[in-house]
Image 1 (tube, rainbow, N blue to C red):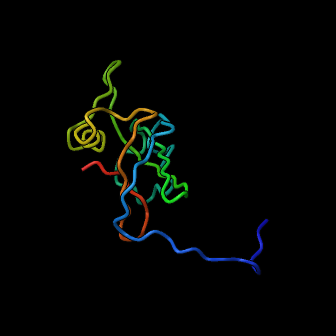
Image 2 (tube, rainbow, N blue to C red):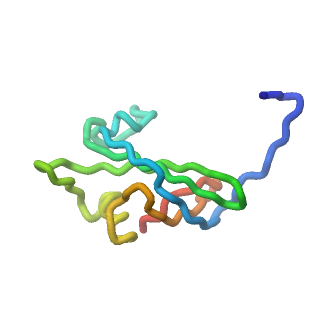
Length: 118
């Protein structure tokens, strides 16, 4: 139960913490389905995209991360460029993201986990 009078602030993670995450779910849709702050988005909000959900266990704490990957459809083919996030993922991991994949994550300067794809 929420109790503001009886609370404890825990220290967050610092920058440069490396861990392994696991892709637990991939949602398919369009960019606007996944981007919350659409007024600052520079790309096409109607382009096809997947939203990859990653779970990370670090020091017996569970963290969650989401990463958006845009692509194009050409017939029944998923098309992406080599410099897109999907292209970087494929180059780094040797395949496109699928549920169950293990991936590397690293905390940024603010202590938030980010997926390594470069």
